[in-house]
Image 1 (spheres, helix red, strand yellow):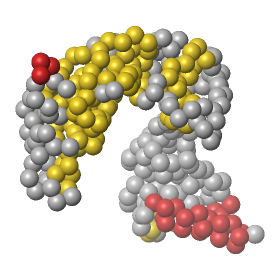
Image 2: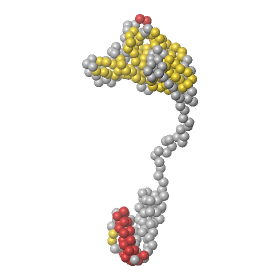
Image 3: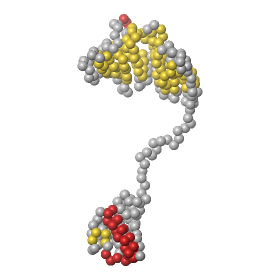
Image 4: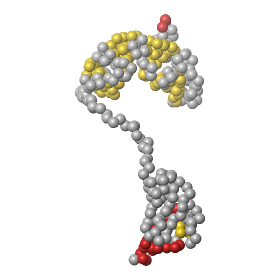
Length: 299
């Protein structure tokens, strides 16, 4: 029985030496976690750091074993200290409070359209909580306006055009007749009020939502007072009123348009040799500093 206890004591000492990384000698500990196998007792020495490490003070081979009670930080025993031991220290969560306690009640709305004769498109959202899915039973766009409680409050349709979400309600750019288009405000019931009508001298036209509210159109827009035909850019506010109209610095073809959150517009242009380039415009007739890597800047 004594031999078994001796083996257990030796096993514990070996484990402590392996974990603590200290040397073992017969004259007692010289470091912060030494091992003393002399005298029949097992002592892991004293730790001058944040906590003590004691494997017990029992005499002979049958002494009691104590895992220590160090209270400092950084001890390697099984006490109650902090640091990397098996104590009672807590661990903070990096993901606390990221997810709301409740997602609320789900609201749903179902719409239908003719999949053969009709068309569908992506929904548009407004800042006051309305969404407008595009579902039409004919080959022309029609938006259903849906409230925050899942109730359809109205519809808005056009021969062709685009709907833009606004802080309150929507704005629309729609075809009227011939080469005439209208910029309008659309409320949550689908009622529209025209703010500006604009004429095109050709079919080239691209649109984009404006971050500050409203939208922007670039392409073959007619200028005022019989000015020569050339590609222009025009900005409309949330009510469809014109805020800005100016010729672009280059009259090359446009096939893309965007606006950043500072109001700087960029347009994609076709250039020779089957290349394309992007041009930035800061609101004046002159372009912003060139950022194109095309062989020759179209800006």
